[in-house]
Amino acid sequence: MPGRVVLAANSSWNIVNFRAGLIRALKAAGYEPVVVAPIEPAAERRMTELDVERVVVDLQRSGLNPLADFALLREYRRILKQLQPVAYLGFTIKPNIYGCLAAGDLGIASIANVSGLGTVFITRGPLLALVTRLYRRALRKAGVVFFQNPDDRDEFVGRRLVRPDQARLLPGSGVDLERFAPVPLPQGPVTFLFIGRLLGDKGVREFVGAARQLKGAGMRFQLLGPLDEGNRSGISRRELDEWMAEGVVDYLGETDDVRPSISQATAVVLPSYREGLPRSLLEAAAMGRPLVATDVPGCREVVEDGVNGFRCAPADATSLAAAISSLAEVSEGQREAMGAASRHMVQQRFGENVVIAAYLDALGKLTGARS
Image (cartoon, rainbow, N blue to C red):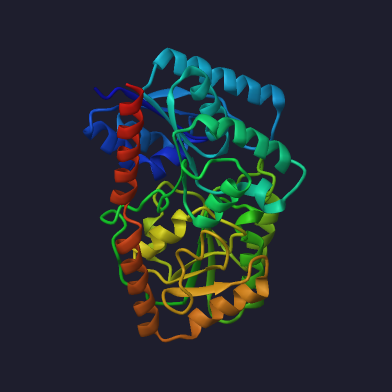
């Protein structure tokens, strides 16, 4: 008989935006989902609508404070010991590491989802050795480790953080193709929209740099997403205010529904240094938008150069400006064709049903083996 399944992430926002469909499918399959995550006011309305059992944890998303992280490990152990779930599903770095460690110690089946490698792997800094050791120990007993692109999977297998038999590819977190339905391109100025946390690693500064180079060309540049000043690569409020005062970008704030902003955009841009499989690009593609993104792992899986958008070099505002100009200069009919290609690509490869089926299959095999 199915039982409780814990879903743990570093934010409630992550759960309601990326895992709502999975939670509904778990309920339909007879499981009892339990969300373990911090409370976030911006996510509370949609979390309430999910009608799911919750356990609140205090989690510092950035940094490696040994005392705080040891406390988090103990808290996961306490929660899992109390709930006695049939499986633990981890999303984002710390829930993957400390949650899977706790689950392994308690003999609970676990599935980790590596949705991206983060700043530590991008910069190859001094923390990399510590993080790889933590991952290797945490994922040793995981039944399945999902990756969202082959580059991330190959890096973890190559570093012996996971065994080849554990590693599986998954098309992101999946897109709800009905909720993100195609809409016509807007009239008026060609508008380029960045969606995501305002982080240096997401290429926000390059986006602003490209906007600065193209100022006066009749285009609009918009940022949509939260500040995350606690992150090692976070954009500061002061820096954002300076950009707006300069008049190069408009800041749309943050929202729990990106669809209205995508509807008003000509194209969506993500100049990230590295991704798992970027949800912002997939949702924009589902709504029929051409895309501009860097030629890096994760982004290149979504953007086919010259077909549904244009690629550029990472950490290069001039290359990004050239890609944006290429999209602005094609005819409206060509942009519509690119948007249609985006929608077709998502329908064929990235529907939410594929992700849900993979999770239910993995859960069934793991819990069946345990029982």
